[in-house]
Image 1 (cartoon, rainbow, N blue to C red):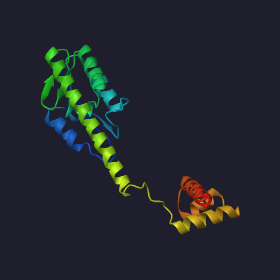
Image 2 (cartoon, rainbow, N blue to C red):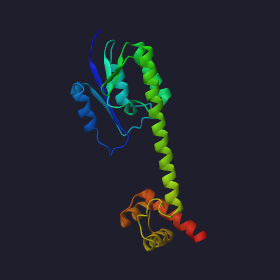
Image 3 (cartoon, rainbow, N blue to C red):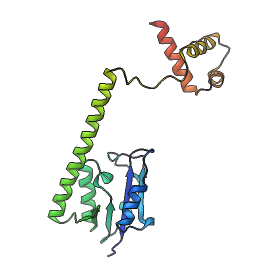
Image 4 (cartoon, helix red, strand yellow):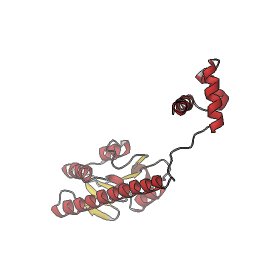
Amino acid sequence: MTNTLIGYARCSTDKQDLAAQKDSLQKLGVAADRIYTDHGFTGANRARPGLDQALAAVRNGDTLVVPKLDRLARSVPDARAIGDDLAARGVRLQIGTSVHDPSDPMGKLFFNILATFAEFEADLIRMRTREGMALARSRGKLRGKKPKLSERQQKELRRMYDTGDYSISDLAEVFSISRPTVYRTIARQSSAAVS
């Protein structure tokens, strides 16, 4: 029976930084080489390679350490599945400074309550995001991505395409855009001509 601390940190987007979570885990006693991470994976996504590695690394008597529960799971079923797996293997779970034994009835209850709050918080964030986007859309502030080419450039691209003298690759090179952007521009100009 070992007594090793294994850390896990996760951030949802590539723009976020794991440094604060790693620092927090090290302050909780986790060695830097025992911290497993996932970068750009949401908590709702169960296929997380770093989490799989962390779960594979813990043994009977070890403790899996996460800075906050929402870094581990964003849904009650996912949190419960992880908790049940840890309990079956004799592994404790530490969330911040609180250590929970998922096999203990009180620990299991507390863990499930925390998981419910984490899922509730994630649902609220999603709901507020959808409401904010709908409001922005209704005010004309959310229009999607701005086209790479001006209206005049789009018409010129379509004119050049219609001559048959230029391939898609030629047009991409002339206008310094990707081939998919050329296709989208042609489609956009075609639909504009129809309407």
